[in-house]
Image (cartoon, rainbow, N blue to C red; front, side, top):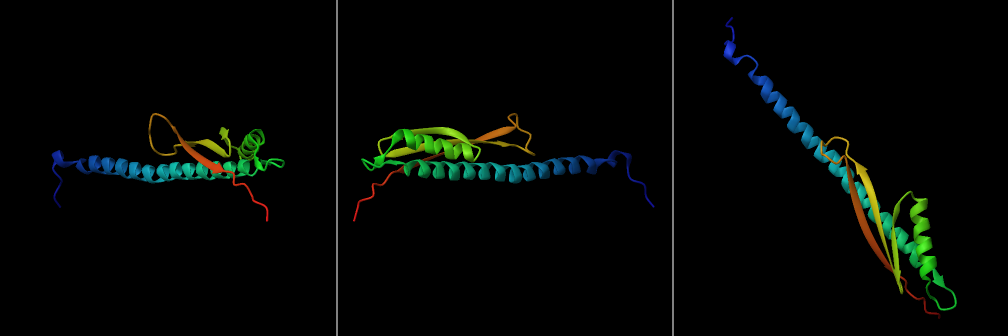
Length: 130
């Protein structure tokens, strides 16, 4: 049996360490990247739903969007689902912007949270009578 040369001892350790770090970074990118995309998707879904909820509020006398009630309805929807955002109403259009914070689980970045933002706009469609 031959003995390994003393100069060659421990050479594989550096390679293994670098490979493991690389694999962890790839796993972190896949996992945390998926969480970021899911957070943005959720923010988009909530923004759209809140805008729709607000657009359904109309003044029965004029059959037009009631700005104060529309903003209140959209904000209520956001609150009920645990989100915060901004609501802007102009004439027959309501715009809702939602922000969602996503905590990083694996990636070692300076900011351990990423904020996903989504904006949705809904236009109230007047319903013509028969």
